[in-house]
Amino acid sequence: MEQIIIRRATIADAVKLSAISIQTFYDTFVGTCKEEDMTVFLKEYFNLKQVQAELSNENDFYYLAELNGRVVGYCRWMEDYTNFSLMKRWKSLELKRIYVLKEYHGKGVAQQLMNLVIQYAQSNQYQVLWLGVWENNHRAQKFYEKNLFVNSGHTHDFPIGATPQTDCWYWRFLETSSEK
Image (cartoon, rainbow, N blue to C red):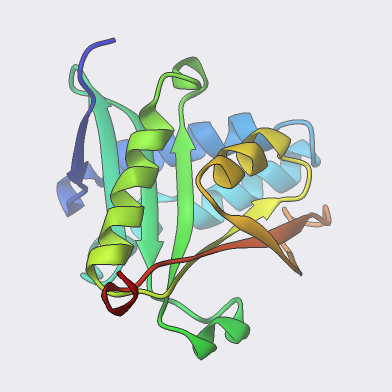
C-alpha cells in the first residue's frame, strides 16, 4: 500500500469530511436502525454547516488520512467532559470518532490515526484517553483493546433517532512524564 498522509483538517476540507463522515457512519450502522432514523441522524450530525462549525473550533481536532488525494479515514478528538462527567477526575481527552472506509479496513489506516491521537495525548500530558464504542461493534472493541483501552464498565445511550443503542465507555490511562 502506498503511504497514507495524515494531516489536520481545515475548513476547506468540510465537504470531504462531511461526505466521509456520512459514508463511514452509514456503513457502520446500516441495518441497526430504521432507515428514516439513519437519514435524520446523518443530516443532523454530519451536514456541511455542522462540520464547518466543528472545524472552526480550534480546540476540536479533526485529522484526515489520505491516499493519493482521497480521504480514506479520519479521527476527531477533543478535551470534552460533557458526556462522561466521571472523566473530570483526570485531565482527559475524548476520542470522539475514528472511522475508515470499509475497503481500507485492516490496512493500518486506523492504527496510524490511533497512534497520532495517543502521541498527542501523551505529549500534552493527558492522564486518560477515552471513547465510546457501540456495544455490538466487536471489531472496533478488539481494535481498541489492542491499543490498551479497557471497558470501563460504564455505558451511555446513543440512540439513532427512535432506535435505542448503547455505547460502552472505554478508557486508557496514560503514563505521564513524571512516571517515566
